[in-house]
Image (tube, rainbow, N blue to C red; front, side):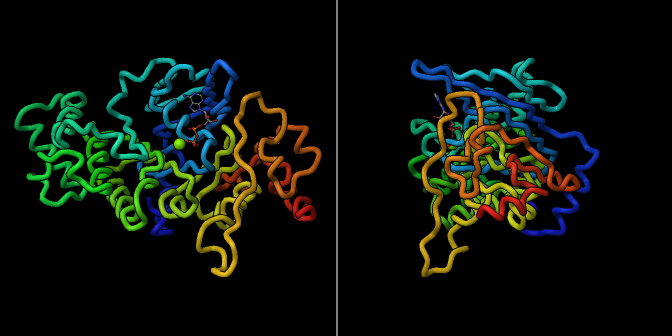
Length: 346
Ligand code: ADP
Ligand code: MG
């Protein structure tokens, strides 16, 4: 999470060039076969994550962020299936080999800490359980490590609090405990699926700061998922904007915020609180994300797009590189050189 320090961003990108990605997702397709319909929840998504960087996945509710996360972790349940694509992690394609070899290398933190914790076991018990499964640690060694982990996530008085139950922790402290459990397996990649959405703003800032610190210390790679562009700006080095199961734009965070190419990204940016004068109503995007219940035969954003033309309703837009040097790309016929044409329609 080097966003707080822009010069670091360039250094990170420079350093990652030529390196092998830790995770490489290629043309991932996850489908839910429900009684009623076939939902193409993740419909051909590709992105890379390099060691030690934070990659953001942002989009409105229902756009396929959590299904992407669950697909990467091998947690898609019936009636869902990872139908196509590769999830290459440390050289293995997890879709082919399965997740067993890498269980401890990937961890996930969900939105609601009270759901993630088991109310009938102490916090320490749950950390020790994870240590036993993933590290083979038991007894005094596990007890000691559990306290260390609670200290690492900033829980004061850890030796005492390790024996407490989840309900004795505040929401923010519960999320810290969940992060401690996620770290117990010593992961290389931490997937954070809206980790601060259930928390109030002050606590949210503390958790983001904690993740940034852990990342610096542990060289963790983070896939950070949120619907909140403000949070993305603070956390991510690079961003993928997702809409109805597809990545519609990808760019380094700074580039995305300064020069959005996709009208959906522009709309998301306009709806960030604080970017609109206080006397004006915050713009929202009319309508909602469509359920991708058929293969794409047009731009899925077109019905809500302020600059859409007939062609957008007829053809699937290609993803075009608008700045190859920083890997800025967008799936819009008005992206890049054609943007002027789109401006005429605005
Ligand atoms: P997000 O996390 O971006 O809010 P999700 O990834 O949860 O969105 O959902 C993406 C799409 O997949 C939605 O249309 C949702 O209805 C569908 N979906 C998710 N889980 C299931 C499931 N278990 N069964 C059927 N459809 C699902
Ligand atoms: Mg979600």
